[in-house]
Image 1 (tube, rainbow, N blue to C red):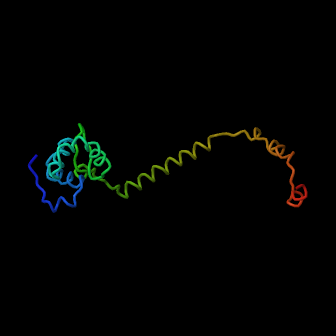
Image 2: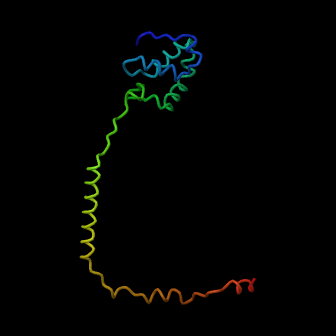
Length: 146
């Protein structure tokens, strides 16, 4: 990793994340968490004792920031270098899918016509028996009971 420098004016308004982004932008390959944080501390002019005291906070910061991505073996890089390309489905493919769905519906309809139902097994008399004990009370009768 090449030696980077920042001016005091630049550092005044920069956070750990800003400096880490600067380091990764100037690096040609992913960097380990430890090396990245050591470089951030060096650039910010902080004491080496901050490494042990704040490494976990730095890890949490990178994990929650969408600009950074953790790769295999604990290496970190900028997310923009690892974004997948998005492909757009053409309209003709969507039309093909609709045709497939329609043909599936036709098959289902054909299957339904082959099913034979026994109408005598359906007994509607049972449904009427369910309501034989039902009593209807209007609001006036309800008020009188109270």
